[in-house]
Image (tube, rainbow, N blue to C red; front, side, top):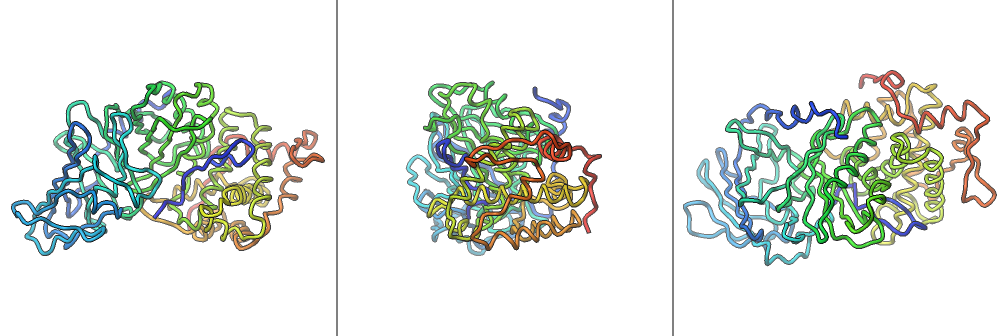
Length: 506
């Protein structure tokens, strides 16, 4: 199952462009956060890897009665599994597809197994992160080697410890904390086992970047030429700080960010995506040969990190995930001073035009479903962005500025968002209407998702003072009407808590 935040597909500039450290005190506070209360059942996994980063060995001990079977998220896991057995028992266990049957075992039994990544041949990997070596480092699809119960009870957890060779570090998506003995461990959490995730092993030092409300855990894999680590820090800090301008803090407290060099393309970040397995993470595949100035003007990181403003959405609702990220990649960069507001408006208009021309004879729902088969990215991304602009404008206009898309997403974050629960777009829109006390989102959903027509932006453009030139490709901003200027500035300027007070959820 792919997350709704699919790969940010990038095409030439003529097509769709879908796609300091602050609060130093918070860095110590977040990294030193204690584990939650001890669960009733805590299974212990110890993961080790050889110095060549080819063989992953796992020692898994179960608290109480072991499950009858374990499951892996990838069908490739069976082929990669080299040996598995119950500790103390000679007879090996054989996988059946993505299932490894343990059978009835005594309480507190342990499983030992190893996976040969060096001989791995990918056939079924999902989530956009094929297992492979990157320089001397290793990027792995978690589903290839992590055998686990298919679900965990609310009071049940898996604790992961890594036993690594000297000079080797790990980057994992799970919640990181300090155990009682002072060692660093991870808790797997309760997101569905088949949500894609990645773990990297290598010669990197995981960096910590503090932004309001979060500490980003950044791992940069090895590349030739070597990646400029300070440039990466500045680039990601700038992008993440832009995202914090929506409601004052970053939406995820401690995300994994992976930077993988060696991508080909004439842009600094030819492709990127967000995964949700274990916890939200963002992966950036960069062309480190591009000049530093291109990274500092790049929009891709803002787009990907904006995905974290929403919970996991099912693939059939990718229009909402990608539309929100496409809308805010312009708005948030304007608010943070990365681009001028006039440039943001022009870029949105250009995107809407491309969306209007793409797949005109299909509904938004159908275009989303077939996006990767027929290349309807422009329709999906930019119609989704148009719906977000309409929602933002209508909320501000109908509530006299007391509500906006910003305040709606902020309230959703405060009341309801969990990294372990998936949503449908209709559910998100229903909750946003409830939180804002309006029917804006229901109206937009009913009018557009099942329609073949691109949303009509005429009224919204008029209210915003966006005047389309005769050639339709360019717009002018009406500076003579103070009301229109104020509405435009309220969108491209940072919101404040006083401006958008939170409403309690019903």
